[in-house]
Length: 420
Image 1: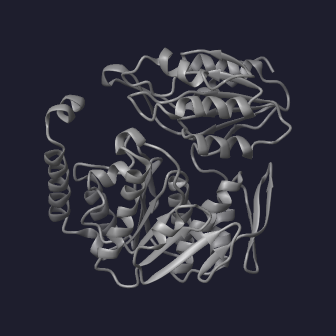
Image 2: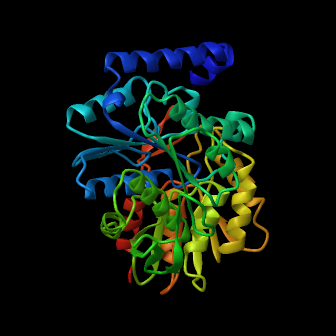
């Protein structure tokens, strides 16, 4: 039905439809963002993690916080999974969520802002106080038409910040990303950059970065952070959250206490099994994210990688690239379904396979069977890494059908069946 609507209804009418819904949502719920401090986080990778880390720091500082991400909804102490298969809720839901947060006594709301949500105007009529840019790599290129249009869509969060009626508006930008200058170029009362490699005025820099199997460690000014989160990319994610905190006059000691309490972010480099071999589940579904995840695994370990690529016409260009990266890092590759939607899953896997030139691989369409095979073939000291879905609660197949799913649950169930 959605495809038929897109085919026969002019795009400007679809755009006006979405804008009207957003406006009426804001009107019905009485523009709740005007009385909340709103932090919007955009970028290709790391958004959900930055939302989670930022919310934790704000709570540690004594504030009541609401948060929306692809992982979960949160209002104060109440949390529930995001089962919408939609990061930014549409059809009045986001404005209703903000009104509920305000009525519940929240002072802050941290929102993951996606390019598709922006195209559908879901960021409109939200008065942002802080806009955060994590990074930008190719994604949703078919949907946007080009990388430049994708970048422009992300920039609309910062354009919304410019137009916000709030005082003391702040932009937070990852200086290590080659697109940083574009996002810094938008107006804000205060601009904060963060980086692992460069220092500039009004920047937060990580020094003496150490990456280990136990987590990451780094120094900001005179404060040493020792986190359980794994991977260099989580240093960058932490810096983004710290930068937001500093913009709200929260000191580094509070940031340290909050971040050091976090042992995992659901479905993001989440270690599900610790021994005799390790099993990680991660959401990585773009080439750059996959490379970051594989690079974060112990260098000398034998890596058994379970992966695939989404269907529905989503970013077909990346499928061979994903295969190439798996070919570079993995000892053994198992290709399987991710979210085939209405595409032929065999064709999707063949396109991923075309990037694999040197490594042993197997194609197993049934994702549960693929996970079972990976676990059964693992030896002591190996690392099994399952990517593409993270903590997503559904698998989307043909004819609009959604199958209940959780990679982490299946890993635990299949691991129990092994004779170890």
